[in-house]
Length: 509
Image (tube, rainbow, N blue to C red; front, side, top):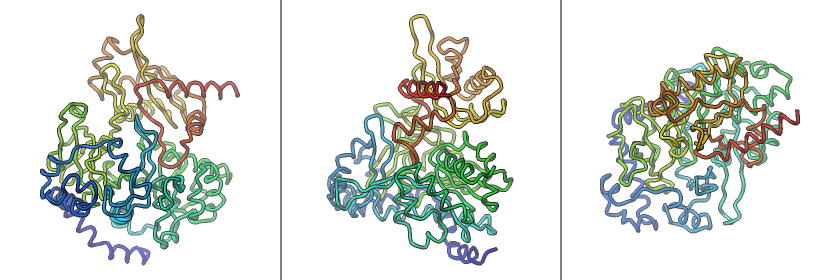
């Protein structure tokens, strides 16, 4: 075991004790987190508005403070970005994480005060190391390099002292100097805004480093990895870095990318560890690599609530704390954070796989689903069905998206799947049939609409020309960082754009 690993494990042994405490006492820890957040913000404008000084219990907080969407908090955030202090939180906020927008907002800007960086995001990174090294004490991740693919970075024009960028760029820019000893590329290259230039510079800098770990979003890391292979002339990454051992990923489901990573990194000992590190906070870590769910981190300054999706769009949705949740139920997640997100509906949906400890899987987005015909198709259904169809047909997928095919007077409705295959199936019709069967098995509402094709026709699966999604994301200015391909969408806006681009690429040869 490297000596530094032994030192690290001794330093963080007490941290494992703290984690064990919140595993067994989730609500007690959550109550403490909420009360600390309320106390710290009692003199802020928001705290005075809701009289935080007199809130002494979880129940009082839930009764007094309403649920918020981003649009509700946007006026506060815009003032903070122009330099106003003591608005949503008492701490001065210099950094704002730029996140993908909602149906009404092009972009969201999430306040990231220093306290959130230290007590949430960086603490999450340390806990990843704590979990990993406690299970793999012979690891080389502290004596070699971690290749981190960050997002864009820019200074906003609304305030001289206010900066915004992808969360990953904010984390890199503010990281302690010691992280530079184990991270590559250099900060200068990591913060390049142009994704394609960044990829080129990373290739120039990193091939001579001893990289044992990758960190980032799976889709953009695949783009980088393919470029590294092309640039180096190697057939897989082990020919460049034979000691590769770990990919810490998050941001999107890993399921569609797993086989592609196995092909690029053909090592039986390569490990994959998922985290849930959003712009709004660091929420979960896969603490056991034999279990693909994540431990909900309950002492990062975040108080959690959960709305069962069955009540999400009702006038009076049901609200659950960690004391009330059940396994096997899809919940919309609501958070209260040190950064001033008060009862904020984050937009992600999760399902608990266990209680004590509380472990979750991300199942999708509250608005990224298809329910045109009452079928209630969610991302989790789509991911699992694709996995089953791919395994049965030896197919591999790079990217995909799904949209409805609307009913016409003489035709029933359906779903159109646009898939860019890494390895296409020998028979697309067989793949389509297997996909449909898997969806029926996973979703009773979908199955009912598909029975005898009563409402829904068999899905239409279109194989797109290679490079379609990349060109589409380029045109939208969405390359790199935490930008994601929308998987399920209730309109045909995206699929029509993608079909046109695929046609252009095919015509160009």
